[in-house]
Length: 638
Image 1 (cartoon, rainbow, N blue to C red):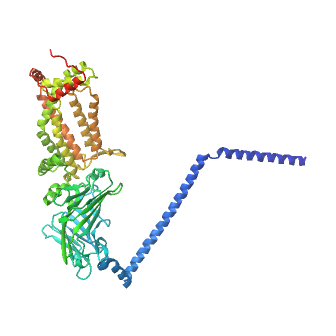
Image 2: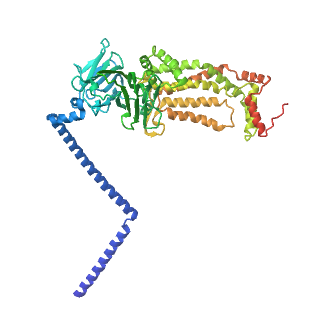
Image 3: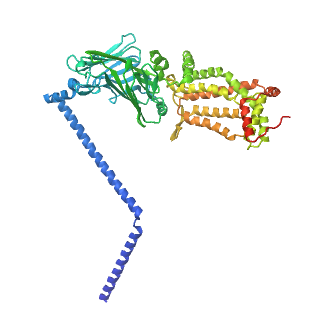
């Protein structure tokens, strides 16, 4: 028995083990991942390994960079501490006569008046930063036109078989103080930054700051450089580069007015298109230039030649968000040079606002930096709108009230056109029953007959179907002039009115948690009021229309205001406020006209016109000829 029992237990154990093994094998087969899952797992493993490799590589690069920085600092300290004959010889071989200016300590000299604060760096002798003291950025910080080591301003030339760039060399400031303030009663202050090239040889940059002025004199003086600069050089390359920072709340709107402008010598002003979709634009200018401007929406940095630059290349490159910079502006200008023991080149800078009156005072067509449009639009802005705006600004401090009064004046001047437009619509309104009768009598598929009959009626009663459109078209230049004027008016910058904190940019009453394409991430109330008033105006006007055969046209008319709502949501609140006011004043004018215009009297006069002999116009004759060619026979007169 014991043996049998033992044998039986062994068999049961074997069976149990086999069952367990079968269960495990079956479970593993059932739970085994398919090919897609295996591929996904493999990709995940590879991705993890790649991330780990990249992290390891970044750590290694970081360690290497730190080691490189440490090595560089150690080398610089060694170079500073050990002034050996070999080191001096290497500098002399590389920089030639400018070897003594190859190393140094960067120092700053600040010159300021009541309007600007100009910081000059000893490295390159260049303008390091410019602050406009009367203005702040949209977030209340000091307004800096450009700032930092990324700025480049210097001469590039060939001397003693070497390429020399003064931007990397150290100038010596010839000034007793490092901070100079030029008061209104002071004489202009001159700061000279000297780049030495050996005994009795140097290049001077002289900056002249006047009291209460945005203009800074800038002269280059060359002494003894005829023995250093190659004798066949007749002009030097002057390179100027700055990063343009965002100054306004509406980055997109500000970018639309930020570009490089330049004036040809004794010719017109030109610029890169502010509406271009290109991220990089570059132009080579082989002819003379009077000035080059790095222009923002409301401020500019301008380099002006007393005579002219020989030639130039300008380039602008957009900087994508979320950078604090809008563009990188570069200008390479040919500075005329005479190979003489002494030579000088006279220039000047303008660091200031794009204010029309200030720029025009300086001449040289600098006022073209204010974007006022072209042709008749520009003329209206220059001689009408700016004059009225400045006149009102003398007596009124609130710019919201100024815009209101400006709108009232413009609408009063245009009132005769508004009256003619309303009278034409009134004529169309009283004729509507007769037009409806024509449309009911002639089927829709005979559109030519309908049109001919309608035109015949208009001709009989003496009504022009374009009578209501022409007055409106004549007002379009004013609307377009305002479209140019308000976004370019620095006077509106950071001026509040009602809920708008800044009339030069959009008025946001609601910040959206998402961005709507072509609309933005905010809601502008003035834009909504403008849109609603425009739609109501169109609806009232359409009540007088007779073109029931073209219902699609009415829908299109309502679509246009909505499209403008999307376009203008990011524009100046002053602009949309003006459009809203213009709509509301037009409502009032139409209400007054309606009170004095008698529809019955108009209809009676139109019936009287029917009795007068009608002469066919050329347009009507062409319509009748076209109808005859299609086989239409006009009804005989009874």
